[in-house]
Image (cartoon, rainbow, N blue to C red):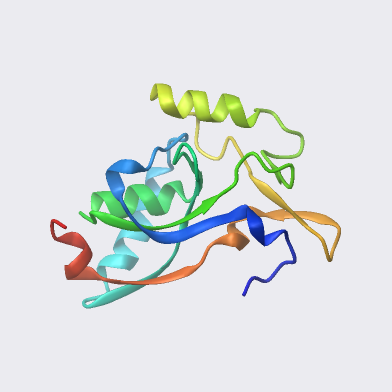
Length: 152
């Protein structure tokens, strides 16, 4: 269940994915990642975290760069990902749209990371008739700390 009304065919899958298959497009704010890392380290057995939103075709991160880099630095081999149809017209790269979706994917695939928070992805809510933060499509995951940090 989601807190917004959207075309649910945008969701192409929700699963644990090998972290090496996911491609970032933005740098992160190191202080924000440090705070998240400290918080996650405080849990012994498991953590509960929102999934990282990725383009279902390219596996480029759409939302969740700080979660991705923090989990990677903590040694997680598998991470929770919600795969989305990034080509959907119900997804925008911001208001105004400074970058096209294609530009974002190309930069990510070239390894040229954009500045932190340079994109702000939005999804159209059919009920409110407004563009809302795309993070609302994330799902909560329970990750067993030892299980997902081991080689799998």
